Amino acid sequence: MLTITHTNCASTGELLDRALDTIEFYGFDSVDHKFKGRKINRKVKQSATPTIALQTEKKLAAMTKSFVSHKMHRDELPNFSYQLEHNNSKISTLGLYATGSRSAITEGVLIATLATIARDSGLNNTVMHINSIGDKESSVRFVRDLTSYLRTHINDMPTYAREEMQNGNIMRAFTRLSEKNHEIVAGAPNSMEYLNDESRAHLRSVLEFTENMGVPYELDPTILGSTDCWQHTIFELRVPTENGGTVTLARGGRHDTLALRSFRTVLPMVSAIIEHEIQGRAKPRRRTQRNPRFFFAQLGPEAKRKSFTVIERLREAGIPIRQQVAIDSIGIQLENAEKHAIPYTIIIGHKEALENTAIVRNMRTRSQAVVPLANLASYLKRLKVS
Image 1: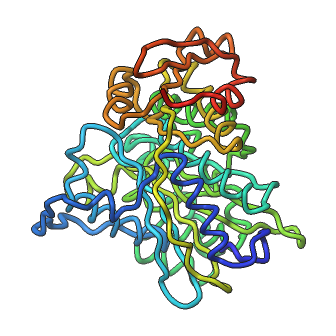
Image 2: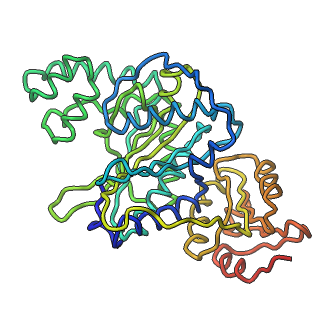
């Protein structure tokens, strides 16, 4: 869990002020605002109870039910939302949720957001630990071999892991062994070796986005959870401590399986949970809505990969934008810019990505200019709303 002493913040409230600025810049809106005006389906029934290996999964199961109840699975476009909770007097929980997209870009958005929150809190040596259990086909084969491996070592296990095995919770047993750095873990099967072609391609895309964002990462096969919950990517953002250990700042990943298993509903979903200790001022200051003057739009794989670098430069320059980087259609993105009456649109396509330029378009006059990315922030600051 993240404590204030790990950061350059004076209180939990200050840390949350910075975190929410970043979260909202990257396109997340509060869950309450997303749910406002939606008709709730109060008859949502759980068709099966997922096996839980981690405490985080309980929170994700509850949020998945909320999203299904509010019919988020019927939305045509991806949604990015956050929820802040003070569970008790000691812990504050910040959850980030991306629904409605199977693309690896959604993992990319969450990874970029988490890494930026860490940097803004003075944590510059964080590492993203990433694993993948793949799709159902891949994970079934992995769990089968992991079960066989653990059973051959059951007599060498501590009591807590043996009891989990006897209760049929294989992933919980392995997770607890991993948390204790038990020697059994070292020889266990590696889930990434069981990935089929589709699952490998998804993981490769996540890693490409992570590299393009400049986020240090390690492949870590010990990061696992219940296969009733997770699918494809699982990650943890960690910071090393002075005694040679690490502190986990956030844990998350893709859990498309959860809605399908629990509610027989297709709802692609990527989430991350950050837990802070509460110290000093507990709550963030009242937030004011900022109406950005610029909309960022992208088209094509090269432009998508370059998007995070451009977005982060604009954030550091203090230039608020609206963006929908998880959407492929340039038409839908430009429609959204028109809908919100945003004066200027920044456009990066394949050509611009290769040439390190961007098109800046005046949405009223339709005049536009090609601007080198190195000069983009200063150029935007000089523009006036016409």
